[in-house]
Length: 436
Image (cartoon, rainbow, N blue to C red):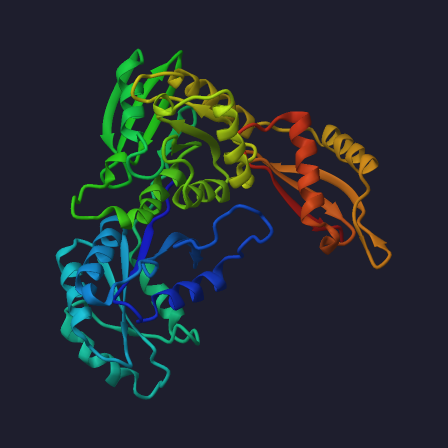
């Protein structure tokens, strides 16, 4: 089930990032203490009045003051192309400027819902007067807010969710859904072509939920797969390579819909910050993960080339330590067949359920080997644990004092569970509760 996408657009310095942070801080809790997850993200999952959507901040692009119009057009086009609803932010203090009209012109041409948001309006009495000139943009009634102080943000979100599309839930539990995600030009299309061209039965190609993506169904050894390909989404040739950070946006819906994500990396270029962002989103959403190192045939080999590459990935993607790594050539087909076997294994691991009795035996053994942490003479006591859900596996651990559960000890318990049960390719979520 893919979440709708809401993008915040506007010219520089109108408060887009302030609005993004205001909504994010009120509605989500950022998990701290997980090393390796890139934090300078431009997206967050939001819930408002029981409606969920992914919020995109377009404020991350560095704008050259000499070519503001060109840069604003580029960032707005990318966001508009992917989003279901646009929050168009203007500056109530500065008034209506040429840059606002430039963005508004793009939005009027797009068949998208737009919420016109007049930011930096701190004075209640003058809000109607401040908003009046923005009617000239032809984008409906402006909503006045102060992102810095939070005034009017609730009204803004009410308007946004009234425009969100209805999310359809597909009944295809027996199908393994695989998202192929990664930066542009890492070989996603070549991998899809290998599967589509070499397997026994191609059922059909239909347009996917993500714009310009193709859902490819096929059967291999009596198992039906759905490939959600994000490779075809970069249709505008004038979008330069320096805006490739927006490949994150292109991957969001595909990741939301999948069971397993093939996180494709370029063996020649190596790991980039953009790769970390995409991998971080897969991890945070609890999806199955397989690191697919493509173009391995183009790498000059030495004695320990593969081992050194793997060590580098493990060092820089510590939060994905559970993800299998597969070195392939999508062009020649080398090792590609292994990916489906690994994907099926990961799906099985994500649905693994541990009996409460066996689970507590493992936890008690772990505590006996390595005593829980203590603080000011009070030691953490683990009373019992139980599995709350699968896909991904979630375990509830009941303790005397929640704050005594240090991150390092939580990771130790996770490693003990992995050494006993595997959980290959899937995140394990440990939820620590105080026993009443």
